[in-house]
Length: 490
Image (cartoon, rainbow, N blue to C red; front, side):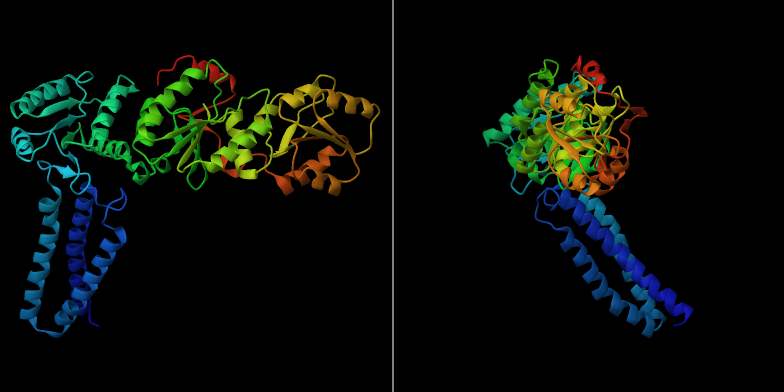
């Protein structure tokens, strides 16, 4: 093939592909705006559009390329004109297919809600002719003086046309506007009338579209917006498995963006209704989620005294809930978050490492596997302290020290299951594989700790191995929880 032939073929294929691609993209975007795209649960498929584009490109490209190679200059001129005209038509299709701000764009074929820009007088008149019942305006007249003027103007226009105007600001200060949600949900549940919906910008309009989809019972078809974000204000978000996220308590704006206009189907809160500081947070979230199609469940998991059985129960509850599921601790840098992740992913009674930040009198203890901690010999009341940190079984490894019978008695008084002395490493590895959580001490415990970690570790799932930092500030100890809970705002 000569250079001239190569350049000619490239011109044919690139020009033809650009024209057809522009048309395909315009058709796809139009379908999305009309709610017919398969992402939000419509009838137009990504695979269908892509396949049609490739087939058309091949069917038209092969003969056009051959004609270019085999015919004379006059034919090449004709093919060039045709290709350039097709390219121009493909690009211009964005104008006549997509740019329709003055016309209602329906959420679904024959649906009740249409979406568009701020309505002109002509649009309001056309809505009356099409038997619309009213206009839902998501503008914020309280928070923005300019928007207040626009709401007054459209109130006058709708009144002249005999249409109702529903002013529905999404936020009241920093909080999601519950009155707006209740009013819009009532319109949806009424099941009658057609409404034109608009907001302050394209992003707000898309959010209103997604919100109405949820209120219309189509929440499962919404995009998984949690997959778009790594952290909330109060900590990182961890994806524990397909459709299961571990997240901190969201702010009001995070609730709206990632829950109400996303595909979340259920929330499992690890906060404790027996803790006074937790109660207002729990009730506030329940009142926001349950009326709007998101299941809300509780599996309280207090920090200390820590009960590993509660973490196992929370993991079992999570396994039975609809997904996408968000499991919430107030902060993800917390005992409850660590414990849930250990129980959910390792399937054993967990022992969160942060419970062992404070050393015993004989030195530091460390968690080497989700259900095993290794450390110095406990003394006196430290046996009960280990119980409060989640230990439920204890064993000694190595040569028996003096007073081991006393250790046995103190263990049992503290509620720990005393296993006695283990003869060798192999027996210990078998012993601690399940159950517990175990505390291992004795002269041989340091050597065996690494073998336990290699066999059953790490202490925390790898997904939680990254430091929990938000805006450059590490979310450290749980003592910070209470200070952040004193005010419910945000």
